[in-house]
Amino acid sequence: MIREIVEIGHPTLREMAQEVPVDEIPSKWVQELIDDLIETKRFANGAGLAAPQVAEPWRIFVAEVGNNPRYPYKPPIPLTVVINPQISFNTEDRMSVYEGCLSIPNLRGIVNRCPDVRVEGRDQNGDLVDKTVRGISAGTFQHEDDHLNGILYTDLVTDAKSLCTWGEFERRYEGDFRESVQEIEARYVG
Ligand code: ZN
Image (cartoon, rainbow, N blue to C red; front, side, top):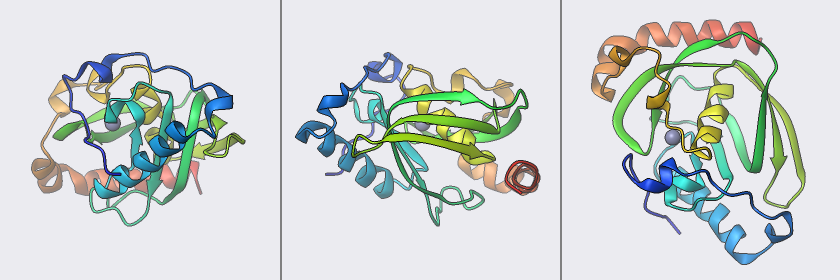
C-alpha cells in the first residue's frame, strides 16, 4: 500500500525511532510496513525512505536506486532493507554532496558525509546485514539512518546559502555537481 509521506514539521520526523524486536520481524505488521516503504519509495521516486517518513517511529529504512528521474547522476543501489541499522565510518574523509528529501519538498542543499561506511542490521527476513557502502551511495544510507534519530539533512547543511529549489539546482548547480560525483565515485568506488 502506498502511504502518505509526512513532511518537515510533522513531529514523528523529530522523534527517536524505536528498535524493532528481532522476534517481531516475521510478524504481519513489520512485513507490511516494509512492503509499504518499498512501494511508497518507488512511487515517489525516492532513493530511500525511512519508517518515520510514513509516520511510523520504527528503526527501519529502505534504499534503492535504479533509473531515478529525481537523481539522474546517482549510481545504482540494489534494493536494501535495513532494520535496526548501525552505521560506522571507515574513513575520516568527508565529501560534500547535495541532498534532497521526500519529506522536504522542492529543496536541496549541501551536507558533508562520510564516503565509506559499514552498514549493519537485519534484513526483511531477519538475517544479518553487514555491508560496506562507498561513494555517494554511502551518503544515502547516512541520510536514511539520520531519519531514525529525528535528524533531517537541513539540520546538517554546511552553509544555509546552499539551499535551493530543484529548478535552480538543475539550472545552475547540477553540472558542477555531476563532475564532483564522478570524482567521488572514481576515488572511493573505482
Ligand atoms: Zn529524507
